[in-house]
Image (cartoon, rainbow, N blue to C red):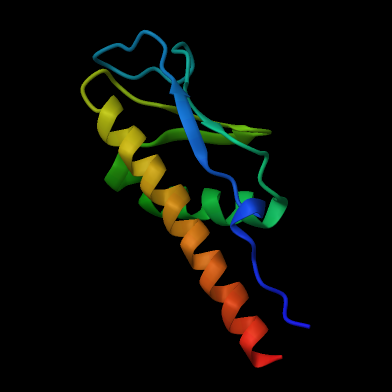
Length: 110
């Protein structure tokens, strides 16, 4: 029996909690922007997501990304908050697509 990765097992962003943002980011003092997920991701998903964030951190100006349960917390300035939110959405969707393809390829080999 093939082991397909179901889209129902992958987290999706259902909204954002955006605090008051400042022109300059101070990750130690500022409240994080939070992406709200429909479900908590598993450890494999979290590890891969954080690896991608680390790889793209300088490009995206992502600071201190954390995945905690059904929340992805990150810091950004008032100038780049929307771009960062779009980038996090793209990362989540891209990772989900990648995991689905990998799961379907593995299932096809069985």
